[in-house]
Amino acid sequence: MFYEPGQGHGLPFNPFKAIIAPRPIGWISTVDSQGRPNLAPYSFFNAISGSPEMLMFTSEGFKDSVRNAKETGEFVFNLVSEPLLQAMSDTAAALEPGENEFEFAKLGATPSRLVKPPRVTDTPAALECKVTLFTQLKDMNDEITDRYMVVGQVVGVYINDDYIVNGRFDVLKAAPVARCGYQDYSPMRELVQVLRPGEAPLKT
Image (cartoon, rainbow, N blue to C red; front, side, top):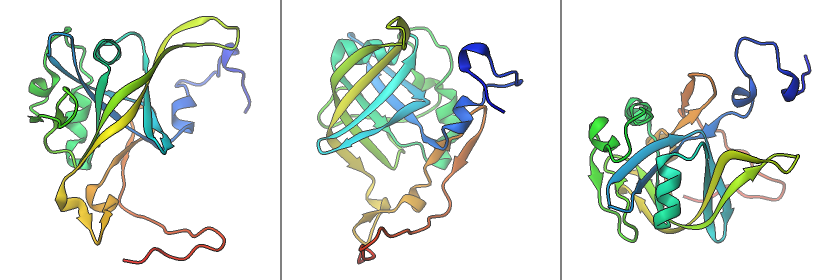
């Protein structure tokens, strides 16, 4: 089949998010101007630069995380491991502004080192970020949408020492969960090593 998004796809469910898969989950913690914590998952999220280390998340609507990041200039990315999958989903609940998703999902909150938003206590890894870009997305007709993109530079990296094995962050042990569209997720349980031309395997 072929379809133009503006004309509709004719399917019972939109395939777009399932085609762009797997995707990492942007589990973003922020605080508001009063210091109250917020925690929410974002489907449109990824790393965008290795040097400097930068990442982004996009919100469909001006939600708490976006407002907090804009007002305070800070956020934290928390890695979603398989044991945290249901709690992550729970933090997507439509709570009132100022309500604490950490408490709602029965999650521990641990202070960050360099930014005000806390990290999820049991996450294998967290990235503390300072906002470098905040923008409202436009469509191809130059029309403003209600989609907001936040870009942050990583200023601090937390890794649970249990997940550092032979000098590497052990991805399989951390068991990150991928977003796969619809109501589908996929825990990482296998790795395949592929070398580029002229590359040698990493030494351990």
